Length: 381
Image (cartoon, rainbow, N blue to C red; front, side):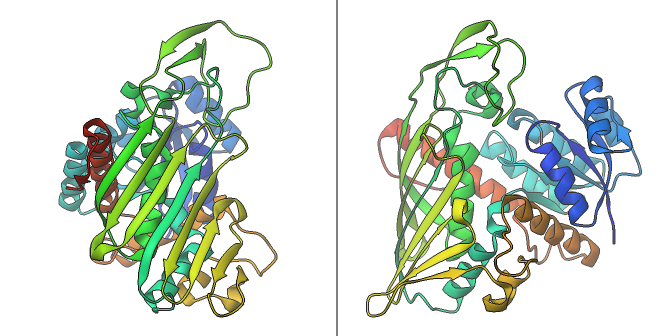
């Protein structure tokens, strides 16, 4: 079954969705940018048949089966609610909403609309992440003692680096935690099979003001070689955060996130410590899973479908030595999402990050912010 999909958003991540949708066998029939001109430019650049002039025009297009939201965080809740009310399936970029009140309403709205609804936590779909989860489920690690990890980038290192994400009214009161930390939280809960139930957090805004240039700045865009007039803008969202974590069953963890870590372009990393063995994985070297032992040699497991568990093999299309990475994670998430639509199983047995998962991440963000503000442990509600 091929669905007809419209994409909202023409910045960094929107075109990634378009490419992955096509590789996943779906038909991209339209795109919407922040203006009619941007919609048209994106449609021409990406060879998409229709450029929408407005969100309402997209919703009214009866040929569209599914919508992907790659728009700014502040409009996710409103747009997602409208998409579901229009009777279309929906895949939304993270975070699902600005508040847990909004995300809880979206969980209810998706159930009432009886439509598939996913959040784009694509990092679950790296093959060696799937392999680690399978080995945890088989008991190969034995009892898990603790987890450690981080998600670090450098694209906001300088006070002259600016993007809408740094503004609380555009992206929400949390930034590094919400933007990249939620990817780590979703991944580690997926791998361990345990929810985070309490947090103790410390957040830091390195640059309390940034220089906002005239015109637009895209996520991960290179610095413009020609200087532009700038305005000094106060910043309250965090550049760095550190969290102590308590999971179900007493598992402990610690992680940090940073968007001001020089040299780290997009490094998501986790370590698992178990009675029988340990594991370390990093997204910047995603083809390699380190396995550690006390009484035997440590070794690297190299991604190769021939040596992977069935679930991991399903997210690994190429032979060993033929690297798969970031773009493939989108493809495999979209495959899972649209397979569930074709099979009618999205409500009973979703194989993708659901709106319930997205809501849980927002509730976790709420607890992290409250913990930082009160300087205390906070339960995740």
